[in-house]
Length: 153
Image (cartoon, rainbow, N blue to C red; front, top):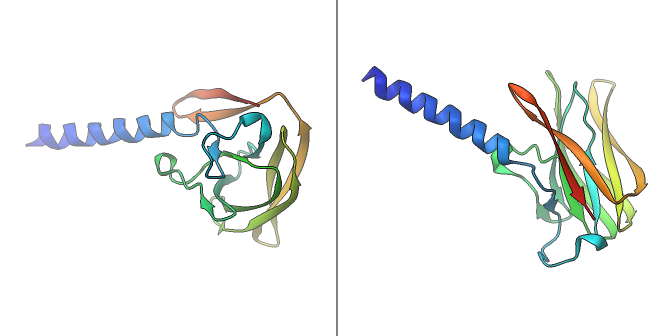
């Protein structure tokens, strides 16, 4: 009986680790048209900040909650124009679910979301990194070293 319980626990750990390994490999789409060319999109990405967890949970009315990594979607593709980005921010003690508005997202641009602590509240701001050919994030893979993943326009 102990063998079956131990096997079940080991299988659960492998499944969770496997899901976390495959999550976030590509930016999720913050729009419905799956055939829209990537060259006509922008990327919104959470900054890699060790003290904070940032997840993009929605773009306008479209959910980008990714079940495989517990909702911590690190990046999404958005269409040009006005975009409302819903977030979940946390650290060891605080959680906050703000939103930010990008008034004029431009194709080929990368918008980085930075998290800060102000008056005991986690806040988010974005910075336009300009027009880029690609952007690379580093996905954590505990206990392995982070894996670089690149998205192209």
